[in-house]
Image (tube, rainbow, N blue to C red):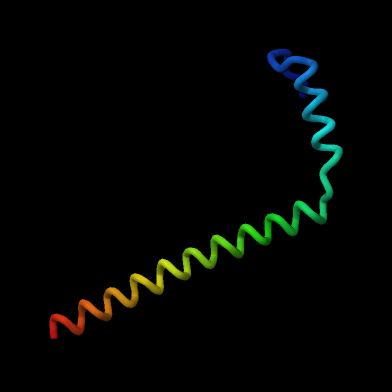
Length: 60
């Protein structure tokens, strides 16, 4: 916020947005997104596991 390259109006808008944040809500949102990402990774790993198992069966 000390930068002279950022206009005062922008700094004021950012300060207002920051002050309006609810710490608990931000934390809940971060956890929700982390769980979603974990689910996506798990789903991708499961698909890869199934594809590898199918490939192994086809080779045998």
